[in-house]
Image 1 (cartoon, rainbow, N blue to C red):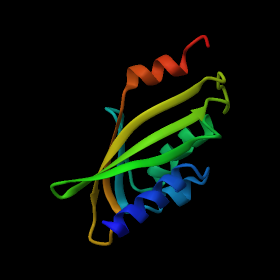
Image 2 (tube, helix red, strand yellow; image 1 turned 135 degrees about the horizontal axis):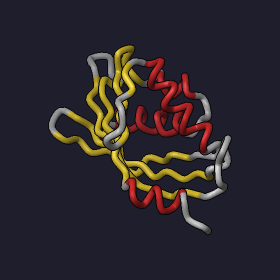
Image 3 (cartoon, helix red, strand yellow; image 1 turned 120 degrees about the horizontal axis):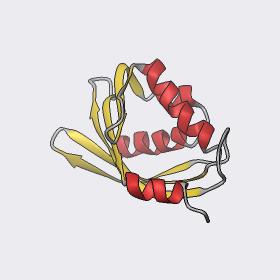
Length: 131
């Protein structure tokens, strides 16, 4: 579990890094990232594009590891995300959310599948509030 925690901490740092390629390097070549019920991003190039969209919209985005949980043969990465929507077309609103990703890892310890979940209603309220 120690190695997995270190991996998760580096992963959170990569989410916060403003370097989408660094983030995507945690995924298998054919890895999948899906956020809530959104369209899955399949393959490192598409995972990079998804990460870039979040990083561009929230240039000060910080993702912190809250805890890891083993659930059968999967890992739940629970996170705390903060950021301000000051990227292109942004409205300056801050978000402060908690959620998790459920990972399936491959034999090399890379993410084969990540299913991410957060409260979309809460996100939209924070993002679109009149302050």
